[in-house]
Length: 289
Ligand code: ADP
Image: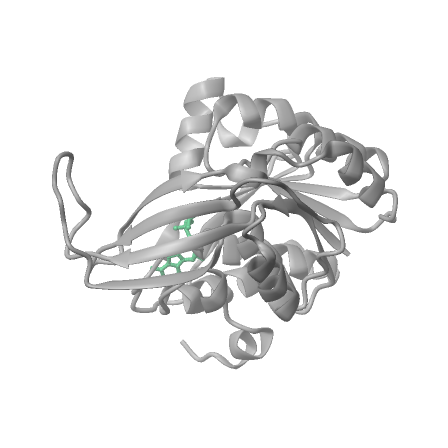
């Protein structure tokens, strides 16, 4: 099982001619409401890849539809908590070049009851995997507890905060970050990716693919991304990470899991949307790039 302490968001996606500049009022040309949040996207991606996924998180009073949608993708939501107040949500502007700008309200994602998370993780067994991102509370507590139980622990350093990575890093087997986050982390810590105290570091490079760094030996391996026409990069990293974890939980060696993740990420950027645009395993296997 992949346990995901992750955010659950409503995504309100506005198509705009360009990203609004300060002081500008701009009419959007289309509006879509979807399921999003880095946590949700990763759960959906891992489930669509064929993994068993149990989501640990919280929604507000308005979040029933999001749990239903997650369950519709095969994600176990038994441990998703209900909170008073607003669910997490994101206001997303996407321009004609597929660039985006996002305003986020964390809501219930930052009000997760950690005792309940600990109880849920009592059901985890060695060989299971825990993933968290920086959109919930309780990242360090969950990572520490999962590590103590013999789980593989992965962390996506997004949205980036140096302090959050620093705190969770001692408990990790795998750290996934994009190029910008990797640069920010290097600057915050004054070290290179090769020197991080995490066995495996994956740096995603957008259309250029990704690098996998084995820190024990300081070895850097590159994996190319398939060539595609990108229309919406929302959730590319989450799709990539969800598929990567699903591959690893199947027992695929890292290079094969990365290749699978790169194929899934490439299909995602060819489609509009977040969680709802994540490709299925069949689509990923069948794709010819
Ligand atoms: P994030 O979405 O977190 O910023 P990236 O932009 O690095 O992360 O994208 C994550 C992964 O998604 C990449 O490593 C790559 O495999 C895939 N991907 C992203 N953009 C493209 C693209 N334009 N073409 C092909 N694959 C892409």
